[in-house]
Length: 221
Image 1 (cartoon, rainbow, N blue to C red):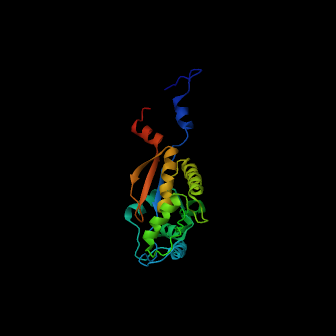
Image 2 (spheres, rainbow, N blue to C red; image 1 turned 45 degrees about the horizontal axis):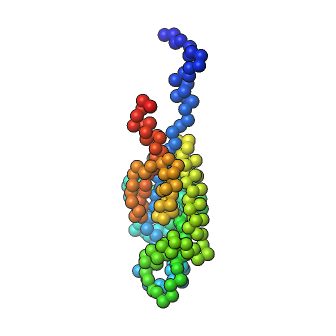
Image 3 (cartoon, one colour; image 1 turned 90 degrees about the vertical axis):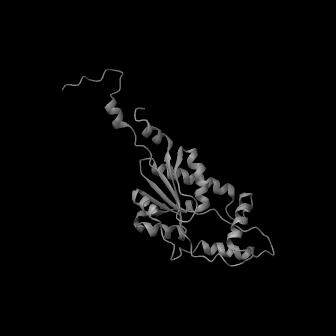
């Protein structure tokens, strides 16, 4: 069958489809597994600073195992990224071959400097709550400030979006609070959360570009 040539001034719909850029890929933010750290000790502010520094050096507990849904999500991912902290790397290695994983310091956890509260001896989880509140309100204790971390989160979100721009599925192994900071940054870049796995160890959230979801729901657009 002969096809008539495209009329001047009219775009060939077939060529338009070929030339269309790929839809951006999804982005998954995973939290690390349970670190090998004692949470039952009672320590003062200085002790918590030392405890947190050690927390950044340790890997995972031997009994901390990945859930099947995260393993399946990793299998579907084209690109695997991780924070450079040991607990994030150990999490990634538990579900994927090391050669598949790229580690970047831009994804490390936001700091938790303990506020100077003399005379208090508390368990690490309690110090963690007090430290996060103080950090959020402006106390940084010489570490990365909230504002600096927010700027880093914006850059990290840019990196994720740029990595997914060619259509690749991207999965990041990072941290509870920094992943939380990435959520609004991804939303501002046109991504919606479509799978919300919560905030526990080994949990993950999956984000997809809004326009891709609209196009999938209405192929006639």
